[in-house]
Picture 1: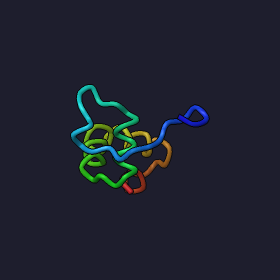
Picture 2: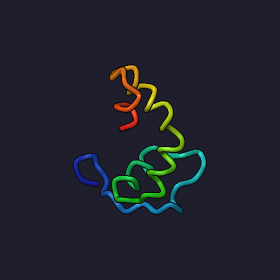
Picture 3: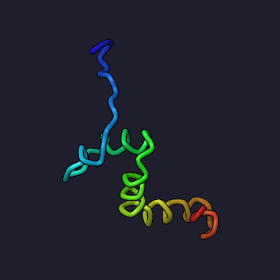
Picture 4: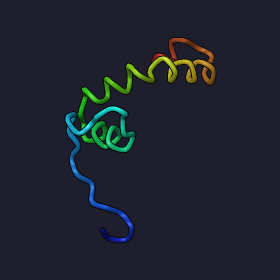
Length: 64
């Protein structure tokens, strides 16, 4: 460890276990793991759209 931070490593889907570890999920998504992104979307997509709709006032904009 240097400066209080550990090195980042690639995270695979096999690394993600219940309960989900948000840092591992974020790292896998940032690394381009589309399956992890799909899990995030399925889990939080409706909530994200709801928040976006309340801020934007348009269903089409919220879905974008």
